[in-house]
Image (cartoon, rainbow, N blue to C red; front, side, top):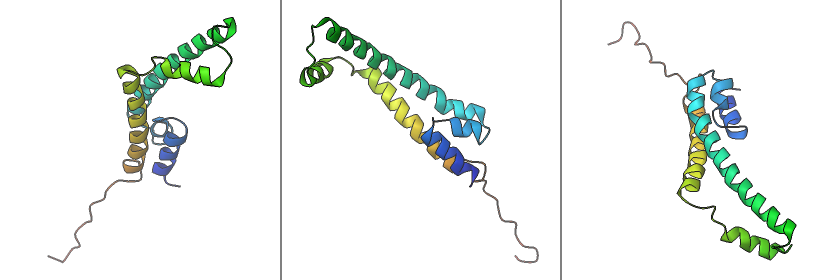
Length: 122
């Protein structure tokens, strides 16, 4: 299997930038995709965990009944959307996609070789 395809699969299935780091041996290029995605994912995880903690506390002390409809309404009413969440989600999606494309298009096995002109022909 071509190294560019291996790198693309690792970047697609595991985490963006890992294919560039592990297969293509391009640490800086991999970090360009890995670090923004990691920051965005950690922000999203933090926002979700705060919301889960709040809902779990409300369920535990009885202020929120254990009803799927009520819980869904509480989640919909929460303020998880905003410019920071949009930016984090966009960073994750764009970096993930760009990492896959970068591995496919600029992998080690995609070097363009100029054909040498044959001798004796003009």
